[in-house]
Image 1 (cartoon, helix red, strand yellow):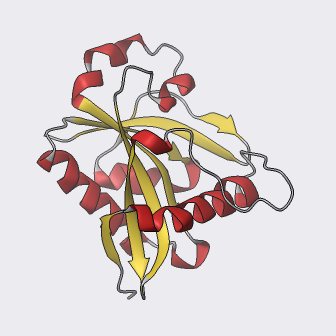
Image 2 (cartoon, rainbow, N blue to C red):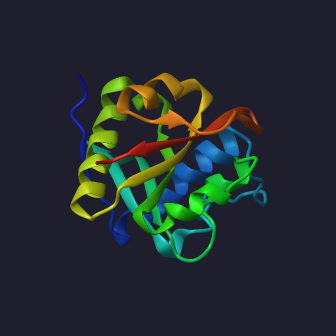
Length: 169
């Protein structure tokens, strides 16, 4: 079993995070386009994200972004037929986005290590709800952690996403 360390990312990790973001969301899933020669993708919420990184042998192998409510709708809301119900939860909720592990490191153990870290982080920081757009290939893993679907899946690029919520209490 691979020995990974999961921790809060720092500024020193940003280059690796942006590179992995490009590799997965531009190159693999084809959800974004970039100019030729560009190999980094900076998330539109970069300035407000808290990054959680997975590290193996002192190299970043994956990350996810935690985004708290800042007055703008969460990104998953665009995948909902009616997002008004979210209003009651906004100030007690976060959105986890961009769950990304390099292909050679994608396994249940690493997924659960990231998930466990986030569950502890949200409890420590006083949040009650976690929203995600679960990728179709991992829906069963999200359900095993405790997420439940709140809307039908939506197609984007080469994948389908299902809006989901986890009650952290």
